[in-house]
Structure formats: structure tokens, C-alpha cells
Amino acid sequence: MLVINSGSSSVKYQLLDMAEADPADGRGAVRLASGVVERIGEGPGADHAEALRRVAGELDAEGLGPDSPGLAAVGHRVVHGGTRFTEPVLITDEVLAGIEELVPLAPLHNPGNIAGITVSRELRPGLPQVAVFDTAFHATIPEHAARYALDTATADAYGVRRYGFHGTSHAYVSRAAAALLGRDPAEVNAIVLHLGNGASASAVAGGICVETSMGLTPLEGLVMGTRSGDLDPAVVFHLARVAGLDTDAIDTLLNKRSGLLGLCGDNDMREIGRRMAEGDHAARLAFEIYVHRLRKYVGAYTAVLGRVDVIAFTAGVGENSAAVREAATRGLEVLGIEVDPVRNALRGSAPRLVSAGSSRVAVAVIPTDEELEIARQTFELVTGADAGQRGGDGPAARPAPRQESP
Image 1: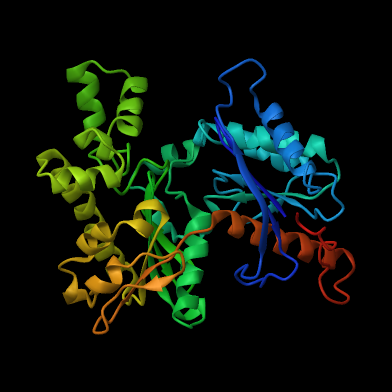
Image 2: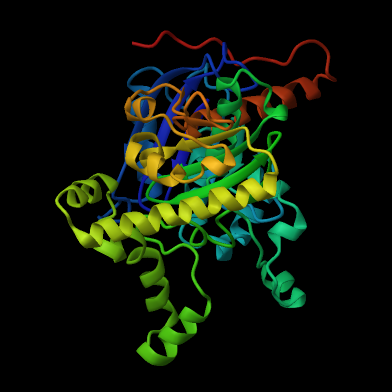
């Protein structure tokens, strides 16, 4: 399975052998190759078509390119599926047109995704191509949580509702957290905290997402590296009337000049930690605002779920900042949440528990793997579709055996 994440200015890729992978969670997959092509659009010929050709060339050099007989399918990350695409789909001309219709909901992301799909289809016509949507995992959120208290006719006319993002990460991590506890995901209620430069929280009941912090766009919710997160909507009107800012200027302010960067001038939690240790007040305040918002969401999602079995920290900050994990759970003992300081301080690349033995709620660090999740969903769809074409006789087809990696 070749996984392609074609963004606005970069193309990331991974090639995974899923032949021996567990279909439930992807464990056992073998990572054969990975890479990134950056700075798309910054020079002559530096477009998505050229980037995908470079990816193909790098893979061809190892005998693993698009023409390899062992390549069974390509899985594409697509940021926004709206309410139309709520699960992975085989890409057809009709599906591609549907993704294009959703560009107004994700103008910075879907165009790059579309470019990657278009070029990939041209490079290997006839090869199954699958779209896996960031929003799909959150499509199960009940209507009372997905709708804003906005005039219904206006909301429906313009698609204004909660969609949520980082869905492949939340899906993977919630399932991996259940595996860490040795339990079936259908039995586990989890709060997942995806804390990278972009940050989001989700409440997952028995493997089903019932609430998430990002909304119509990735701006809502937690404090992020450069995004404000939750904000009084009237701030926009105030800035327009009093500061004279137009919508583009406000958009840039809230998405690129706010969050940790806007609060203290840094959006790297490591640098903020260093500055805090030196007594920097702005860095300390930014940190406290960040973790205060996290605690609010943990408390709110505990109320939504009723029972929480595990809180899972993931992504760059969630996986690597013991200080954030400790501060975000501090004072939550009344909810049965306690972190062990020794366990929490240990570093590692494997899923692990950092909660105290007396904690009623497990607290875990789960390294996310969105590419593996995309490959797993692509593999599941392609092999299932193949079995269906044969009338369901026998086991689902597996991809052709891979060539030996160098």
C-alpha cells in the first residue's frame, strides 16, 4: 500500500507491506519506504505533478515504484469529506468531482489532496486508489453535538456544522489505547488528545466518536501552535469595527499569528519549556492557558462519556512533553485521573501507561501512526471489494507478494 499525503506545499509518502498485517489494527505491517517532497510551488516546475514524479522515481530506484507488481493500491489522505464521504471510498471520476465540490470547506487543503490524486491516477491507470478522509471518523457524532445553535436554513445552505479533523489519528490512537489495556475497543471509552502544532480532542465511546473539539474548520477547540482555538465569535466583529481588519487579515491573525505563537512568540513547546525554566512570564502564561484549555476539555468529555477508561496523549507535544501531560491532568484526581511522575518522565517510542497505580482512569502515551491507519483502511476496502467481485467466495484477496526490500 502506497500512502500519499499531498498537502498545499509538500507531498509525504510511505510504502507499507500489509500482507502480514492484522486487519483490525494494522500491527505487523512492514514499512518499506518513506519520504517527503517539500517547497511545492516555490519555483519553476515545482508543482504537485513534479513532486509525485519525484516520489515515483525514488521508489523506482528501489524496485518499489508505481509499476511494481506488488503494489496493490494507493491510499490518499483527504482533509475534508463533508457529510458526503463518511468512510474510505474507491476514487472514481464522480468521487473526485465530489471532493472538488468540498473545496470551499477546506480551501487550503483539499486542492493539494486533489492534485495528488490526479497525478497518481495518471502515473498508474487502473490501480485502485482510495480516499481516506480526516473528517470520516467524526461522522458518527450525534446531531445534537454536530449542530451549532445557528439558524437552521442558513447552516444547511452553507454546510455549517461540526466536522472535526485529525480523524485518522483519533481512530488509530483510540483503538491502540484499547489494545494497550488488553480490551476490545467496543468496551472502552477514551478521551484522545492529539497535541501537535495543530491540536484536537475527541470523546470516543466504545470505538465510536461522539464529540470532537475542531468544528467547521480546524480553528475551533484547543489552543494550538498558531491557532487561537475557542474564541467569542464577536471578537471577529470587534476587530473589523474597531481595528479595521478585513476578513483575510482576521483569518490570518486567528490561524497563523495566535495560539502559543501569539501569546509568547514561540510555538515550539520545547522552547517554551526552556523559557519557563528561566522565569519567562510570557512563556509561563502561554503554557498555563494551553493546559487550562486541555483540562476544560477533559472535564467536559468526561461528562459527555459518563465513564472514562483511558486518556490517550498523542502527536508531537502529547508524546514528548511530560510537563504538558502532568499539568493537563493536575487537579483531576476527583475524576479518578492521576499521573505517576516517574512513569510520566520516562521517554519511549512504544505505547505506554503513565498513570499512577491508584488512578481509576488509565493515562496513556500512544504514538500516532496516521499513515498506517490510512494503509489499513485502504487495504480493508480494496481486499473487501475484491472479495465482493468474486461473489464472496473464499478469503479476501491479498496483494501480490512484495519484492525483497534492499
